[in-house]
Image (tube, rainbow over all chains, first blue to last red; front, side, top):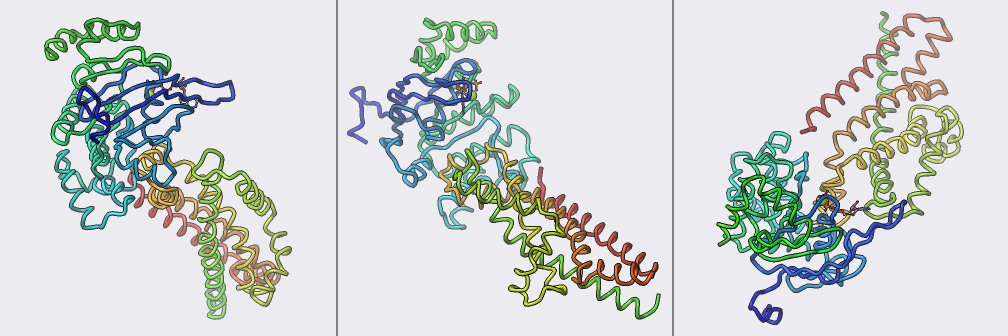
Length: 270
Length: 217
Ligand SMILES: Nc1ncnc2c1ncn2[C@@H]1O[C@H](COP(=O)(O)OP(=O)(O)OP(=O)(O)O)[C@@H](O)[C@H]1O
Ligand SMILES: [Mg+2]
């Protein structure tokens, strides 16, 4: 790890260099990412914002190689994922938890067995699995719902199961792609608070992808703004909002001002 | 109803149960892996393989498009090899199984295809192997649809088994033809039809109840 430290003393956990992703479609190629360079440091909450179709999800999926970049390099915790074979890649993915907009819980499994899934896949022993599942369900305050099926849970509870599942195998990185977009404002706030707590207590690096300004303003340390497959600006939240350079950022700030939120954000950031 | 008639009905009923039960068991055991392979090798699925997908698909379609009565006759040489004779209940099991297997394979394939792709992605993000995805995600999630499909297959096979009876396979169909049709025994005909209706009802409601119990959506 020492070797990977930068001069500023921060340790990069996720590094993208020159990441491109081109989709071949019947109606021609789509350039979803056009050379993205990004460095996310260990222990920070990093936000990626952009409009619909900008390439946010593609970027997230390129980090755990659900989508293999057409060009460029993806390094997570010092490992170049793009260079790994299938089996080493599966191993490396256990370092990266992923939380989804639509939860993606198995309807055939109860809350606790959903959380157990990644541990079963990793070949843990039943006793170890049971202990870890109880521990992590207690952390997300779902012990009382452990035997319920997803159909019997509220949206917020489902997302907490999703988060517990993503945390189960002790990852060092959490990818959240629109994790709160299917939830009402109150539930969103509670999920954001949970993510913050995870970041604080476990020191997890969290990448938050969203088109909701409120999410980045209340949660993120730094953000990158993505426009048409390119990172157009990045930096600490307060800086970007105070002096927006790109059209996308200006639009987002305007939207936030509409919500009377930007002053609060700037105050909190100072 | 005479004692003799009752004995005849009981024996035929048992033959039908054996024919359908054994054929259903074997064709399910063969149809599930076949359905999994069809699904997994399809374009953009877990292990895309155009050659395997196309060859298996063609065999499955060919079998499914052959009318059962023709399949039964065409399979007589094979049946002789497998059970040593081409008449009787054990012999009827062979064409019944071969007709049902591709049907079940397609049911399983369709059920797996209907599983939310997001679940497969979630498992991949956790580092699941293709085999783990099949065993821990696809099959459990598709189970209610598979059971509903197997119920459908069982009902269809009860119908086919009656056809198999017509060419000496035993069972209720055989009884209906030998007594009801050839000897004008309306009471036998009515009794077989009643038993078949009850059997189909029983299978269908049993399947429905099972599906309801395993579906948690
Ligand atoms: N599998 C795919 N095949 C073809 N094109 C794709 C595919 N996935 C994404 N794209 C295209 O790539 C571009 C970026 O998509 P992406 O899903 O990353 O956007 P996004 O920023 O996440 O948008 P949203 O906010 O709506 O979720 C879009 O033009 C989209 O149509
Ligand atoms: Mg998206």
